[in-house]
Length: 262
Image 1 (cartoon, one colour):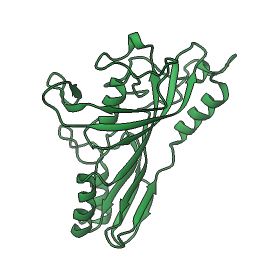
Image 2 (cartoon, rainbow, N blue to C red):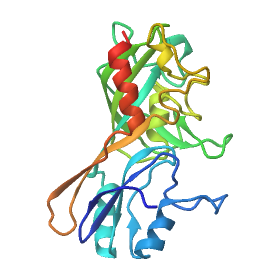
Image 3 (tube, rainbow, N blue to C red):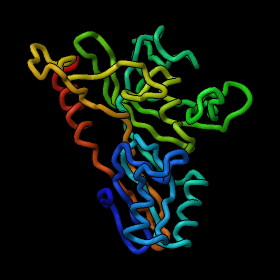
Image 4 (tube, rainbow, N blue to C red):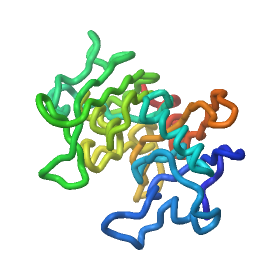
């Protein structure tokens, strides 16, 4: 089945892509399900996707229904006028345990700052195919992301987490994931750039928790969601904002963090 449709008109079609679904066919495994093959089978080859999300990232994916609209909207992504907003639940380890790419972002109280910008060039990691890395001097492509820390939490063991709004000014592969890791706040559940074995469970927050012996994490996936996309409509030339609601597991995790975390 196709993912839920968030917006549709004569020129545009936007989906709420679930985590785990590829946008396009995989280079190595052609048998994996992907959004655009599903779209072409059901709606026709004239529908084209304008941009991409990582397979593990959920949220807004925009398509167009004709070549003129595709060119017009693609130009906004290339010209950096399309506005994208993501939300991420991050683990904020002590500074000495943070990724040693740049100095971890911390305010005077040792917390993730209210607002911060990461401006680090990114490129493919030659030693790990499929992954990206920071280029400190030469190489890589210019990459900039503006972050806002919306909420901060601590579990019963004192581990710090943060609910972060991400506004990428460029669109590089894995940009938000690498930038947050480099800032010392990797996204929870990130198998490439996160902290291994860090999970958030209800028992980490709620005293006297009595649940199943095999307790599942509150978020058992990459905790990154493409929430909002704003573009200029190719026909009306008016702004169009498309919003994808938070996945249920994000809502449950945030509800319990707000209720039980310090």
